[in-house]
Length: 236
Image 1 (cartoon, helix red, strand yellow):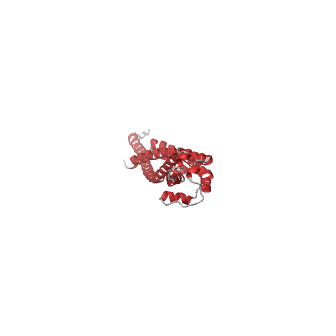
Image 2 (cartoon, one colour):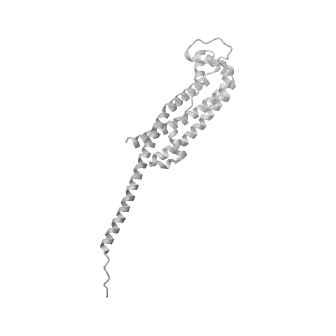
């Protein structure tokens, strides 16, 4: 009777284990490589975001400064009693009105973030704190844009048309530069302060700009926090 050959279970088990280990190692290497590529891609993305947020600083700071000047000059004019205004320097009153006439809106540098949101979304960013801050920044920009629209519409539809009927811009520019006022048929500021339409237009411009300013200041706080976080992630 033929003797059945014994199977080399030890060798078969060893070879099988070696195959399994080899497969696991291969998967681990692939996962490690994919993870490394993702981290490298995220680093490039974070550096791009940092560049954009730093580029927004100048426009945002200037919009905050100018809006603050508009609010302060508007309040200064609104606090002047018409009778007292007749005794004040016309050049000084014109210079206040010239400041109120300034309009410079915030334009964010948002290319990288906009492209990211449009394509993959914020989930590609691994840092949860940064994702939260970026989402809040996008919401803040919506609030800023809304307030900015109100300021711009009021300026174009109410403030500017009124002023162009009553005070030539050249006279205001001359006052701002300290040049002598030219004789013309325009209305002196002390007389404008007696006009309820002007007071209402100026009051609305002050209130809308003040609200816009509060949104800009909030945006600057958000921008500073994001820049600090991005620096810690890219340079720390």
